[in-house]
Amino acid sequence: MGRKGWGGVPPADDTEARQRILAAALASIERRGPALTTLTEVAADLGITRPTVYRHFGSTDELLAAAAEIALGHWTARIGRMAEMREDPTDFLVDAVAYLIEKLPGEPLLAMMLETDRMRVMSRQMVMPAAVRRSKSMLVQTRFDWAALGFTGRRLDDLVEFLLRMIQSMVIAPPDPPRGPAALRSYLRQWIAPVLAAGTDGVS
Image (cartoon, rainbow, N blue to C red):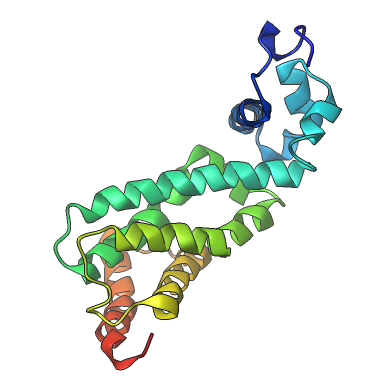
């Protein structure tokens, strides 16, 4: 890796190179939007060749998927902090799902991804096994005893997937007319509360 690229400071290893490419991609998405963010543009921003970027990301879609993964990780962390302020698991899930439905479209990165043909990248990422695992990990670290509620193993995975798909559908295809905060939470509660109440009827 030559010193003319990378701002004159080449990365120490492949891990740092990947991180810096991804950071440049995120900056490009914010500035240009995802439709105009390509491997060529990211390489130019970093002052490196396109083959150098290809060593770490095989396509623009792969790069955008990695960016989406970071964005999804950020909101998962926010939801984890929300759990610290809730005493009831139903209240927590209703508020968490409502928060995501309300806030995701306004996130600079996610909103732009949802407005382009590359929506499919973001859409897939929201319900892929990695997203389910991360969200499940966040749930089990809260104060709530999910096992006592009947959600362990595959059953907890299914609960997380159900919630993610609910968020996905309402973000990508919002209701018309839109629901206000109170109406949205009332709507979510009528579906989420029975699911939690029925948890002890299932087996893990």
